Image 1 (cartoon, one colour):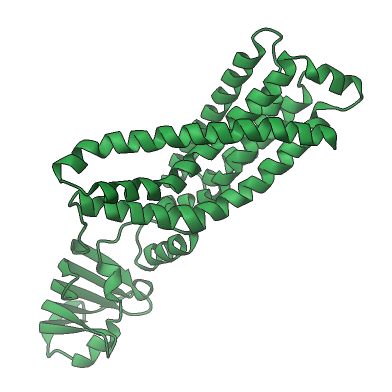
Image 2 (tube, rainbow, N blue to C red; image 1 turned 90 degrees about the vertical axis):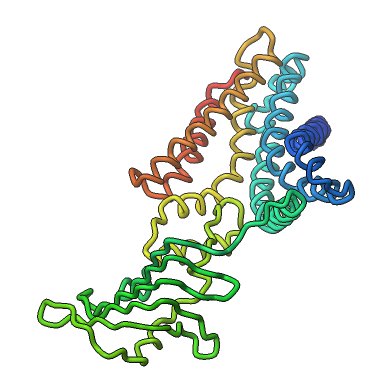
Length: 358
């Protein structure tokens, strides 16, 4: 018990010191990158300070894995350098048993980091981005152009030149209507269409109807009842492309459903969605790696262990980047793209721990 308390006391003090340092550096970099833009747009200093305040959770999210890695490597390397572990090993306590409290803490922190990211980082970072764009006069528009949307399982296809979000109106709209077995049935052309919230459908203006009969498209009288089938909500046509890793899991899930429903590619979005669950385990992995790599040499123990641990963490990031690209282009499943590096490095960490110097 005393060993556990001693280990935690050494580890936690270094961890919080490293976390504060890395957060400060990220805050400073973010400020310097936008400082001239703030000055040019005569941004209110109080509002700029608010932007920096909102960035703290995101900076902490970036810093936690680095701080955990540094604290674990530094603490264990210091034990090796000061020969404190000789007494631990001589008393019959293995390296794994001695470091179990660190592994348990990092495992709990991995779950905590997921909820911290989902409930704190995502909303505060979104507010930070919104306020920063306002101060820099970079507000985005929800209008969209050159739109193609598959709806009703591909039975209805919308093609519009432009969507006006303020008026909730589509301009130069073509609607291809197909039967359940995907055979062409009707094509509707309208100069514009406006969303009717009460009826929950698009109302077409100056509409021309083409019906497919006997292998030919024939112009027919427009049937207004066909409008009731046009139920795809206006939100689908917005310029609402989002980065899945910058929204909550619920929002990401809804966005992926939207991509699948409209027939758009979803492999990259799904791999990023799974990454939201797998990436927090980097906290557990870096501690595992630090334990396995600490004390690999008797010379320059501190610097060597830190260098090996940082190199292994960089290798993890590179591996995950490669697998995510493979998932994006369909060479592996989105699930494996996100989780394979975690499985691989846990196995590697176990092997390193097995052959660690004790």
